[in-house]
Each structure stands twice: as structure tokens, then as C-alpha cells.
Image (tube, rainbow, N blue to C red; front, side, top):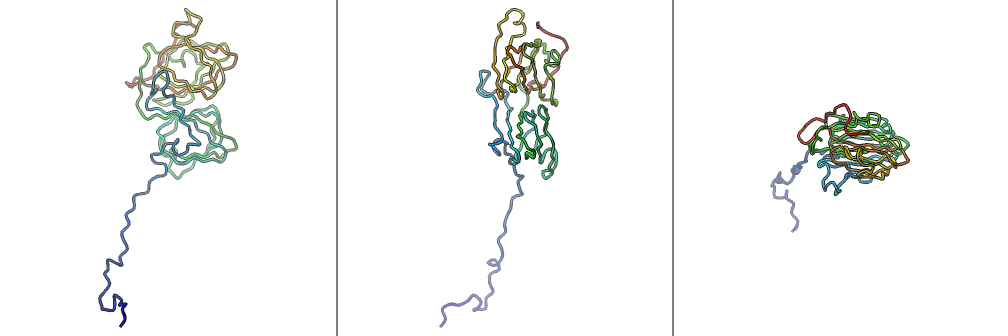
Length: 274
């Protein structure tokens, strides 16, 4: 009379497929931060300040990104992946790096001194400010081969004006250079590959061409520099003077090779006048 009959009432065995747990396919674990840029991972910490759509052109230094990083005490960014990059420390402090030149789980604590430069390896990174003051840095990321040309008869500012220019960090592709001019000082004519300047102090810079300082007191360009100003500069010769009343302090990032792979070679001596 019962209307409810169990599956076992008939003596039949249960279908094994019903009782077997389904097979779950899992993808290999993905490293946190893999393929994620620092600006996307932590937009409150990293700001893209690459000069774009300038008078020089819509894509100045293709394959290059200039980023400003700011970390308050106790702040930690999210994991992100970076190509090889070149760092200038605007405001130093104690920071911890995870995954920099080490296994992903290894954390290295170090003091980044104000005014220093460093070349950082590519990989997945995470950074934490473990000090007591805000840390600020510039990161130039390079993802492509060099472009542009080496000026004919190239002579480096590092040779013509060693008291005004000094290398803070370098490898065989890029260099981080500090520039300092006292009020009223001028350097001697020199040349560069295309490069990008970052203002560290408020000052006034006047720019002359290779020989124009000899023939005309009027500069080709006058730039009223503010701290944080980004200034793209094309390859070629020029002469720079601090024509304001304050000390001029800037940092710049410059390739050491051109698009054809020619090395950034310097020659001693002085060109032009000054």
C-alpha cells in the first residue's frame, strides 16, 4: 500500500556514478600581481607622469613610462609586476621590498636615502613603508629598445661639466643623473640623447643652442621650473644657464644607446663657447 518505495526495495544496487564526487579541475595558482602594472595595482600610490602629447610629439620616448610613487608610514602597495626600472629617491625612508631579486616570499628591509639612485630588477614586487616618514620616489620603466639618434660629434655633459652633473645609477642602457647649478652659473655646450628631466627645486633655466651663446645673449628658451615639473628634452646640443636667483636642482633619466644600439660614448673637451 505504500506509495513511497526506496531504490533498495527492489534489490537493485545504486548507480556508482551517482555516488562518485565530480572531478574538479583547478588552474595552477597565479602569482599575485602577475601582469599587473603598479599604477593599476595601487593607483593611490603610483601616478603615471610620463610626458605625452607634448610639443616634441605625441609619443616622446616610446616604450618608456615615468611614474611617481608616494607611500605614507605603514602603507603597503599591492603586488605588481615591473620591467627593469631606474629609481630616484625624492624623499627617503625605511621600506621593505618583497620579491625584488629574491624569491617571492622573501622580504628585504632597507633604508632608501634621499637623493640616491638605483637600478631595480624586473619581476613581481610589493613595497611597504616601514619607517616614520613619507617616502617618495621616481621610477622610470623601460620596456622597449632605444629610439632616436646620437648627435654627431656627441660630447657628454658629464665630461664638459663634471661639477654640475653626476651619475647616481646606471647600467648599459640607462643612467640616472643629478644636475645642480648655482644661481648665475652656466655650463659648457654638450649633447644628449632624448631624455626627461624632473624638477626638484624652483628655479629658472635658460637654454641656448650649441653656438648661439657666442652670438646672442638671448636664450632660445626660458623655463620657470617648479618642483615636480616634468620636462622632455630632444637629442642634440645645448648650453644651460641658471638665470634665476635660486639654486637649480633637477634629476634626469637618459638612454645610453640609440635606436641602432650605438653606445653612449663621451669625448673629453669642450665644444662651443661658455
